[in-house]
Image (cartoon, rainbow, N blue to C red; front, side):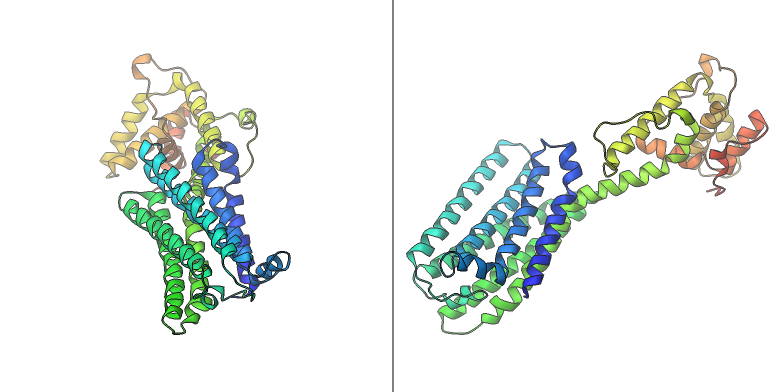
Length: 389
C-alpha cells in the first residue's frame, strides 16, 4: 500500500479514540472505556510505524531493519490489548477474566521481548521496507522472529474473533451489531496472518508467493481494522444517537410541563454538547419534576373517560392508553382546581413511558380534550402536530 494509506488509517483510528473522549471524561475510572481508547491508539501506532516512510526514518536513525521489531512489538501490544479488552468485556470482573487478562499480558510481553532478542541475534543488513517477512524468511534468527510474530498475531486475532462470534449469539441491540462488526474485522485481520504465513512458508519450500504478503495482507488488515474500530465505537455511538433522539422526542412534553422560566436554569457542571446522555437525563429529570408539580390536578376520571371513548371509537388499546395519559397531563397543565385524592392519576415516569407520553400530547384528540375541559385556545405544545396516529 502507499504510505498515505497507512497514515490515513492511523488518523481514522485516532479519531476513533477521540470519539471516546466524552464518555471517557464522564467515566474516567471505567476500565473498558480506557481499554477501547488504548486499543485505538495502539492500532494507530501500528499503521504509523508500518508505513514505508516511517520504516525508512527509523532505520536511518538506528540500524537497518530496526523498524521491524519495533513495529512487531507494537502489533503485539495491539493484539494483546484487543484480546484483553474482549476478555474483560465478555467475562466482566470475574476471577477467571482477570487471570486470563494477566496471562495474556505476560505472554505477549514475553513475545515482544523475544522479538527484539531474536533480531539482535540475527543478521539483516539489507534494508527492506515492504517485504522483510519474505526476504528474510530463511535467515537464521530473523526467520524465528518473523514466525513468532505471525503466529502470536494469528492466535490473538483468531481468539478475539471466536470470542466475538460466540458472544454475538447471546447479545442484543447495539452490542450485538458491535460484536458482528468486531467478528468480521478480526476474521479479516486473521486472514492477514494467514496470508503472511503462507508467503513465508512458500519461501521455506522454495516458492514465491510474495504477493500475498506485500499486496493482499496489508489490504486485509486495513479493512479489518476499520471494522474493528467501528465495532468498538458502535455501542457508544448508538447510545448517543438513541439519547439524542429521545431528547428531541421529549421536547413537546418538556415544553408542556416545565415552566418557560425554568427550562434552562439547571446546569450540569462539566457537561459539553457531546454528552447527549447527560443532557437527556437533565431533560427527563425536569419533566418528572414538572409532572410532580401537577400532582394535585392529575385527574384519573379524565383518563378513564378518554380511554373508554377512544376504545369505543375503535382505537388500539395501547395507543388509547397513551392518549388518555397525555390528556390527563395536558388538562392538568392548565390552571384549575385540585382533584380529590381518590381520583388522582398515576403517570409512569420511566424514560420510555415519558417518550411515548411526549409523542401523544401533540395528538388532536388530546387538544380536543383540553378544549372540552378548559375552552379557549389550546397550548401551542398541543397544536404543533396534527398526526392522529
